[in-house]
Amino acid sequence: MKSGGYATSQPRSTAYY
Image (cartoon, rainbow, N blue to C red; front, side, top):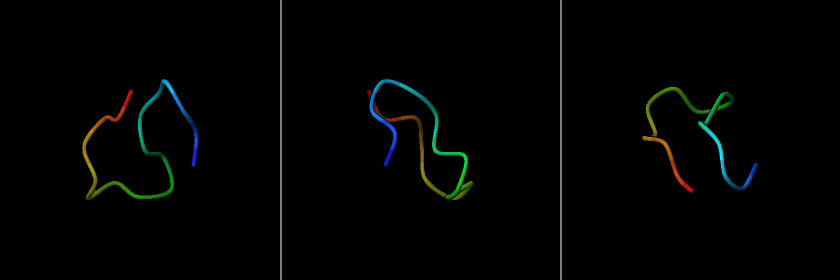
């Protein structure tokens, strides 16, 4: 998972920072 960004792999997930 990418920290400090938008979930590109999971479009159903909201932006997690």
